[in-house]
Image (tube, rainbow, N blue to C red; front, side):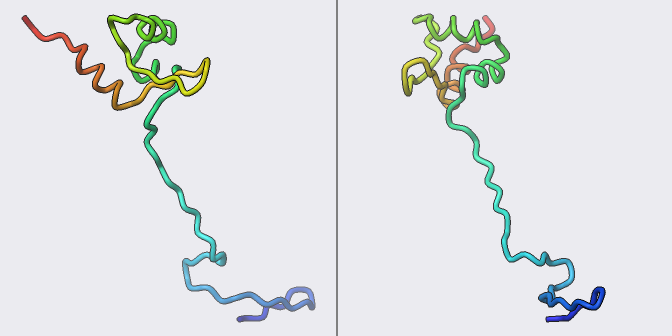
Length: 93
């Protein structure tokens, strides 16, 4: 430890290595990819409006995949959306 004098008052600090932080706490940042998207997020990713997403969700023939974890909440699983998009690709004739 080293002692520092400032206006006649001494204080003690721990000596730290050059470039090291005085704190022993490290921040941990974790970036997780979502496994499901809310309606506004799914619409943005697909490049369509929320209304169009709603129409596609209600259309039994298009079958856009979703889960309903509780009344009034729809989630769109990312992997299911990827599969759905690949199924929608039109092939040249």
